[in-house]
Amino acid sequence: LKSLISAQVYSALQEPSRPAHSRRTAHAHRDVHIVLRAERKDTAAQFIAVSTQRLDSEVHQYHEALEKTIDTEARCLAGDWVTNIGTRYTILCDGDSAPRYVEMELPTKILTGIFARAGDWWEAEIKDEVAEGVIGYLRVRLEGDGLRSCFKPPGDHDWCKNGLLAFREA
Image (cartoon, rainbow, N blue to C red; front, side):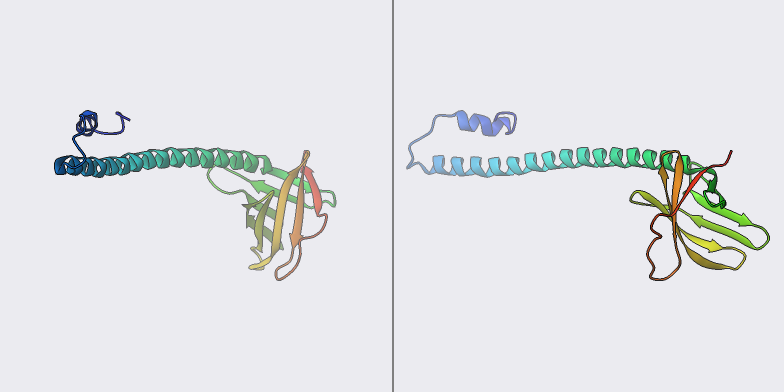
């Protein structure tokens, strides 16, 4: 208790009480209660401030760890991939930006997209740079030694059911 209240209030509480009919005693006790309430509020405010700082720090550390995890996963996506039906594409990933999809069949098709995390998947809007338009959406996720991809055209369509499995090009 002594650590929570000022020395002045603590010493006032230690003084022997005067008779209850004494006005001075009643005022002193009221003043002590007012000071105690004020000091409790200050102590509570300090506790809340320290707790908030600690919580903010923990949240910041969590987000840093999450970003490192996402960066590690993004780097695992990087590379040249070939699907089980022969489609070849590349996912580029440097440490500072989101993974980027590139598929080229020059001179008729250059497909690009920038992935963003969406649950277990990485999703991208795929644009044809030659035709200058969105051709659909692609999502990928690591699956064993491969990369599972699912596509859906623009509009109100569902993702393909099984998708394609790609492996790193040797």
